[in-house]
Image 1 (spheres, rainbow, N blue to C red):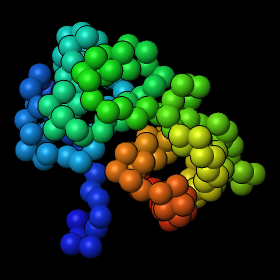
Image 2 (cartoon, helix red, strand yellow; image 1 turned 90 degrees about the horizontal axis):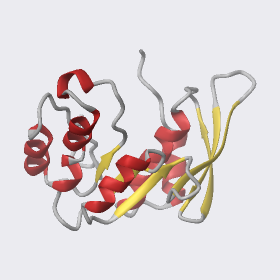
Image 3 (cartoon, rainbow, N blue to C red; image 1 turned 180 degrees about the vertical axis):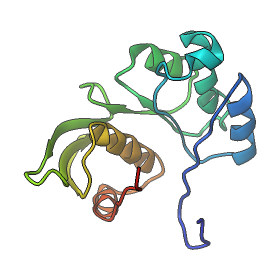
Image 4 (cartoon, rainbow, N blue to C red; image 1 turned 90 degrees about the vertical axis):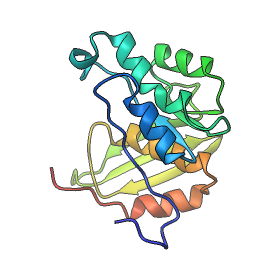
Length: 169
């Protein structure tokens, strides 16, 4: 639930056709946006990878012009198309060029905790999270890129991640 004391709220926008995300972005007027990926899961709905990418990039294209956009740096086509929109970008991923880069990740012996090192615009940060998942490090990098784009300090990111608990399933 969103409470008056919350500093931020994260909204996920879905689409079944071109224009759906545009409508939601214009309605929400977000302070920051993210295009986390443009995989193949919904190609059947859109008909091609290009149309799917076009739909997902609506979140950047139709956000207010000064809105920072977080984009997955490990997808060269997605990152090139996002750069062409001419918005402030914060990139994340395992790419050496990412603004928020996964440097190291390991599951601890009991396999219910992860230790992840991120480089956040040249600041190294060590995260200990009470979860394991094969995409956890990249997802953490995405969350930290969003947090960075709205002025959250690295110390606040580390403390917040320590309190993280996933949901069942």
